[in-house]
Image 1 (cartoon, rainbow, N blue to C red):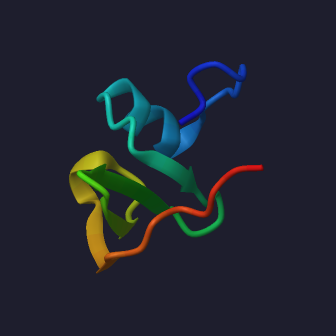
Image 2: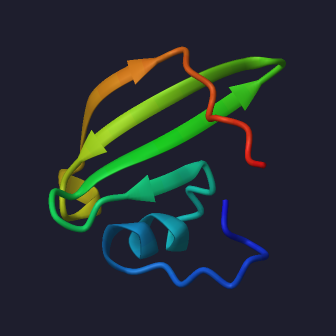
Image 3: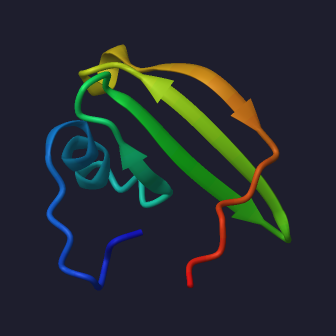
Length: 71
C-alpha cells in the first residue's frame, strides 16, 4: 500500500512486501501483529496475523471489513 510514498518497510512488513503481499496495511513492531486487506468485486476481507517470521505467522482474525478511506 506504500508503493509511491517512499515508506520504508522493516521487520515483518519488509518480509511480507518482499514476498509480494501488497495487501499489507500495517504491522506493529512490539507484538508482530499484521493487518492485510483484500478486495474483489466490491467485497472486502480483513486478515489479522501474528508472528515474527513468515513461516510462523498465524491468522488470528478475519472479517468482511474494508479499510477506511484515506483522505
